[in-house]
Image (cartoon, rainbow, N blue to C red; front, side):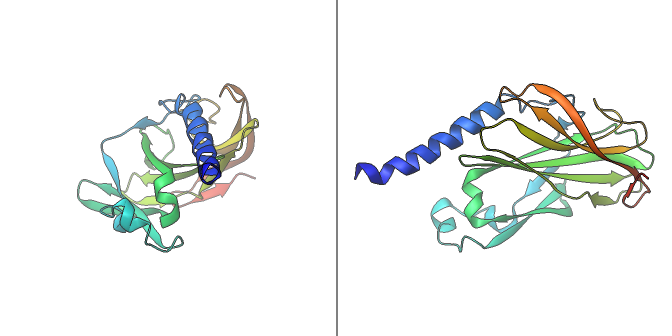
Length: 201
């Protein structure tokens, strides 16, 4: 019977240890970010919202539920799909950048989905709220930390550390396991044409 619980306990320990280490740096703004927690928007988990843990375990692991961004009582835009098997091990965080300093952009909304096992996986979903009230998702970014030094992919905006005037920068923070920023590696630079990202030539 001892061996039956050894692996689950080890996995749980890895998950808590990895998440606990990262949680120390989850305060905003982090790493020179311009994003702060918000009460203006919220997330609804669709069919998972009212499902208890016992019922959730009866779902097919590959059953999906869409998570939506909500403002007051208005559903604005789908953000990501969540599998039934991931619900218990994931944590969603919502923040905004109210001063991105890009023409035609009112704010940037960021939904981070932290999934913890022995590795920490993060999906970053950025949504551009335009001056005309449209919501435009940017391509999703994914980060994984499995115990080595790792690259933390992000979009950077003009009002942030490592930002570029009038442009959106895609790159990654080179972080140590102590979550110290050692450098930022710029990979691509984009212009915003009011509808989508345009790669800068």
